Length: 288
Ligand SMILES: Nc1ncnc2c1ncn2[C@@H]1O[C@H](COP(=O)(O)OP(=O)(O)O)[C@@H](O)[C@H]1O
Ligand SMILES: Nc1ccn([C@@H]2O[C@H](COP(=O)(O)OP(=O)(O)O)[C@@H](O)[C@H]2O)c(=O)n1
View 1 (cartoon, rainbow, N blue to C red):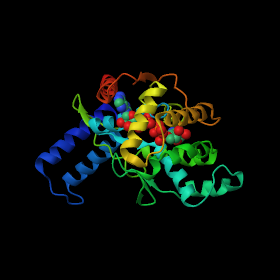
View 2 (cartoon, rainbow, N blue to C red):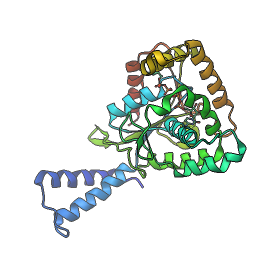
View 3 (cartoon, rainbow, N blue to C red):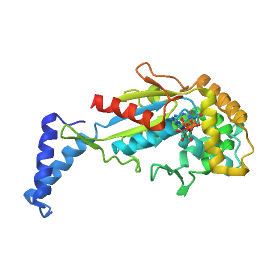
View 4 (tube, rainbow, N blue to C red):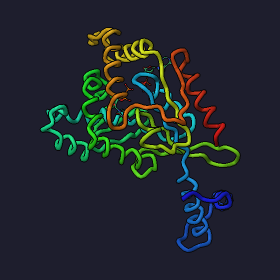
């Protein structure tokens, strides 16, 4: 439950006073009780997070924008695509073909037991291992649609994503920013169904798109930087893969890629990264 404006003001006053006096922390002293009350109120304030849902097709700029935005605003960041990528990787590591219907239960078990964490904005951990690079290969991208269309996997990940957004799963700490004397905390989550299914009541929804050729060139440049001469694909190959994945995402029966009715479209084809981050930051500031 969120606190009333009076709760928040009182919490801020008590907290400021306790901090100013650098009070000792006895268990039943006034300062301890005041601090506990302030913490409870602060938690109540914190529970009303400003949630930004960013959806859109592959390589349109969602995660780059989401991370920089989260950094600027001091918000938590959840890369939902990385979670589907991690499950796809874990299936591969266990030699489980997600396209084989006979493996349905095994894939569900993998998703159920996978511990996915985001220790930093750029890091993805799967069962305690850093898989940030391993999940970004074209091979994972090509096989992910089979995992993303598995309703049991979606259900398990949706549950985790909602918990992460509420801060109930560690790793998405928000320090927030000050606005009109109040601390605004929040979370940015990007994916395909965030504004429609995962956080349908998000405070701000953005649908990011860009011309497919531009997206392909950007993804190709990214892969080239990471894989160097080992990269065997051309820009055309990357474009074909993106189109195939877009089609699978747009036409999937469960939680397809869809612009929420109240989402704002941002076409990044001719924007710089800085411009797209600034555009969304402006929308946040207009709303808090
Ligand atoms: N406006 C932009 N101009 C140039 N490159 C961009 C822009 N936005 C994103 N990129 C780059 O394009 C690639 C794909 O962006 P990314 O954020 O990973 O997309 P998504 O999360 O939608 O798949 C990344 O290498 C990123 O650095
Ligand atoms: N919320 C989400 C996020 C990703 N996905 C799936 O995971 C794939 C990879 O997502 P991603 O965000 O890492 O992909 P890119 O946009 O970075 O290429 C998508 O193509 C979807 O099939 C999904 O189904 N739902």
